[in-house]
Length: 377
Image 1: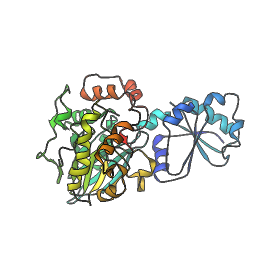
Image 2: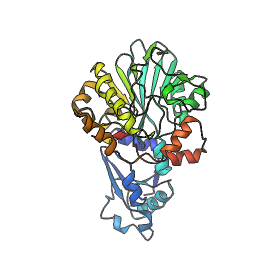
Image 3: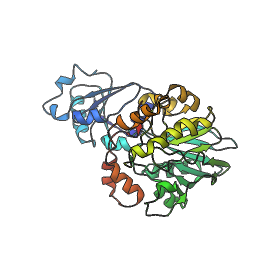
Image 4: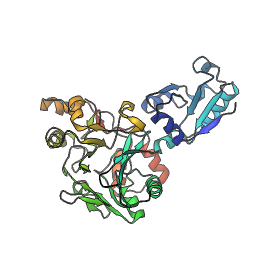
């Protein structure tokens, strides 16, 4: 049978609905080990394409011939070639991922979180290939987007589909792992862009300060800027409470980890802030709040339909980063056991400050790689 192409959206649909998915990744071994497509029912195999130039015979004992196989490479070219070779070798259901890992990194999967009191809805946009999470609060014809990715057309199209106008965009902090689309989206929608002022001291553009006591009103929904000061990942990191039920934690608290304090080069300075936020400020909040973070690190954090969320009280029971009683041990954990820093994070921070304006293709290259915003206890 002939090889077919599969789009990132079609592949995402399979993964979030836990369909068995066999991936043949033909990138180099080091690229595969650093960053690959994952899911609860994903089986991944790696064989660099240059090992297959003379034929795919060695794959015949490793891969089933009668099941769907998705071939993946960096940009979509090598996977096309290998996919055609597999089809010629009588593998029956072979697909090549359109655009490769670059396109996979950019796909956003919208997931409905819940309906809101008084009408309206809350949506989470899951960036499966990057581990990023962003949000849309829609109410009475208006919408706010929180922690937007640079692919702003996704939010514009979604807003149009559900019949709302984007009036606010918010970044919970100055991002270092991905390029924010918040300012661009606000300008395109003629809305207002909000950023914590402590993270905005070096920005080159106009913004509306995200500060305590200045809650956002979206249609009939009030977005509480509370607790305004939840520093630790950055000095200005800010949390939002929506509908008295949902806590948007940015990069401070995740489902299975906590935020790292070093991406502005101030880990030692910010450790105390991070601990104060996690061990005091958040503990004053209701245990019933549903935590909605800005990132996830592991596929097991994906729930029904791909939703990433957890009850705050449950995290205080299960999240290892919230259960280090000794302050010295906590400091050691978040300064000595840090994972590698995100790809091009310094350039990404400068881009998000407006100090540099890379071309579109360079922006894509800067973002390549997995989420690395977390400390795992």
